[in-house]
Structures are given as structure tokens and as C-alpha cells.
Amino acid sequence: MTASGTFGYGAEFKDLLDLDKLGAIITKTITVKPRQGNAMPRILELPYGIINRIGLQNVGLEIFISEKLPQLKKITKTPVIVSIAGVSKKEFLKIAEELEDENIDGLELNISCPNVKGRIISQYPEDTFELVEAVRKKTKNMMIIKLCPDVTDVSKIAKAAEDAGADAVSLINTVPALFYDGGKAFSGGLSGPCIKHIALRKVYETANSVKIPVIGIGGIMDAADAMDFLKAGATAIQVGTGNFIDPEIPIKIVEAITQITKSDYKD
Image (cartoon, rainbow, N blue to C red):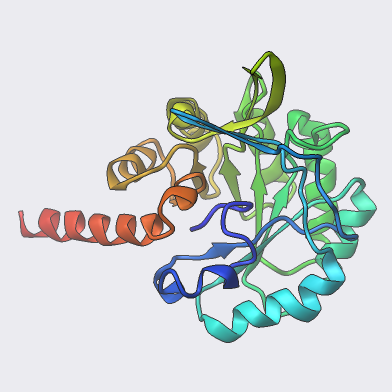
């Protein structure tokens, strides 16, 4: 899958790769009202990854439903999972209800973004349970909960999501980080190869604590990385920062793993 925030609304990539070869497209996170995001600069490239502080810039729910989603559904049969966020439970519920009849393939609740003001829901099992349970009552769509790495025990958060009715959990979101650029502090979410082994540990802990599928995210750049996450207990993976380097990385991973699997069967 393509990780939210790294693949736009999906349709932007139609001339760069065959979208139908992807496992799923997870859209940029959608909020009720349009968001301009944080002030520039918002991305800092590093030798080992990137720090971003985009701030959930998006067109808002109304334009997404009327323009962005139809464009994407028109050009691909690949499952579309919509990432959603809100500043309150009421906003999450409104988005889930509005998307109920839009023929999407699932929701990913982004309750772990470090680049917006306010309480990060997925740092607290009680808050996670309350929100997931409320959204579950409003939607029949498959529901993935995206979790934060910046916690002592991520398995407790994942178990709260499972108990509240989540169909799967995805982890990890970016890691809060700080970098001094020319003497100025640049803070945001760190992603890329440098967080892979943090993500692997979190996925391993979670996969051994819940029965629902675990989707691995974090520093996956090739098939070897993807296989590590599958070994750690992930059922599926998402490619994030890798999309900025080569949008075909998710497809290359699928093709490479397919060949590995065929070789195993022959042996």
C-alpha cells in the first residue's frame, strides 16, 4: 500500500506508474474543513530520511468527495482507503458518516500525527478506545487505526483499538524529531530508513498482542525491508518516504516478493 501523505490523492501518480498494480492507495489525510497546513519550510531532507511538518494540508471533505475521490475511482480499480482526522470526536464521526456511501474500501483513522496542535489520541488507550468505538458505530467500512510510536507500550494502544472494533492497526507514524538547520531548529516527524528498526520493534510487539491484522510502516525501501516486517508479524506493509524517491517502489516490492515466494514453492 501507499502510506497516507506520501501519495497525494492518488490520481497525481497516474502517469508515473500503473495504479492497478498497487495493493491499495491510502489517500492524503482528509479533515472536515480545508487546511493550509504549517508555514514553510515544511520538509527537511536528510541523508537518512526526511523530517516533515506538513500539518495535514488538504482540500477538505467536501472537495475530496466531489472532485478528488471521483477522479481516483475513475482511473483505477485498486482499493481506496481514505485517511481521516479531526480536532474532535465529532469531526471524525462526520467524516466517517459522509464517506459511508462513497464506495470506498476502508478508512484509516489518523490519530497519531505529530505535526498538529493538540492531544495525540493514540498516546492514550482510553482516548483511542473511545474514539474507535464511536466511529465503529457510524460506519460499516473496514477501519484501520494508525498508531503513534511515541509511547511506552504500543501494544496497549493497539489492544484498545482492537477491543473497540478496529479491523486492523497500522504503525508506525513518523517519529517526533528535531534538527538544527543553519542554527534554526526544525522540528517535525522523522521518516525514512532511519526509523525502520524502531518500526520493526513496534510491529513485533503489536503483532504479539492483538489478533487483528497489523500493517507495517517505516523505512520500507525494498523487498528485503518488506520481508523483515512480514517476519515481525505484519500482514501487509505501506511504503511512505520511498514514494518520494521512486513512486514505483511499492510495485517493485510486490514483484520481488512474488518471485521470492515462487522460488520458495519450487524448493
